Length: 262
Image (cartoon, rainbow, N blue to C red; front, side, top):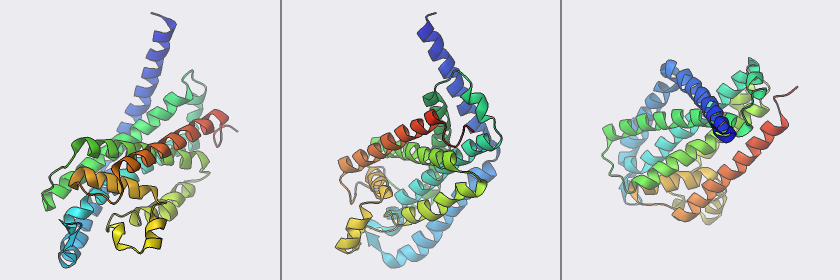
């Protein structure tokens, strides 16, 4: 076996070990990690979809309940992929077992990929559960399965990266809740989940274009319903750009040992 093959085999073992740990971590406490999003989304469907939605009528030619389904699914993916990585990686810092990874021969990109994969799996699992709940309330015909799956995957990757960066800088458990509370939640609710930005005045439409969640929600809405306030190519381009920037920044933080090495 060549040296390159041995290296890749070692990398694969490292990646699989981290991923298995992450999956076991959230699956063992599914009542805390999966069930709450399902219950919360069910309440959204009942209150916003049924009670309020019947009074609103249609949005972009669709029943209001159908219109908000893409955004609610993405909300679940975003919050869970982010939460999984930020809590897991910070716990590794707090318990100091991150040092075992740092002194191992595994490169930084393998360590990062392992944690990201765990966040992606949790995000997709919860997103799938929420999608099943949505089909209980309404019948949705998928417009483009490829677009829908790509956006789900890219969104989970992007917010897993965000959770990783938050965990790098966090110095206490309180710090890992600051970004979700004061940044992530406002961006989510202002990202076109419950409305079309065409309803906003021109000034606020322009402001909304600075919100990265707007591109994800609209691209996913296109995958499910076939309508979007944002051209699909621009949405994909923006999401990919954010992923590349945050991915490069995460690797830079790991390489410099920010928040890890003392």
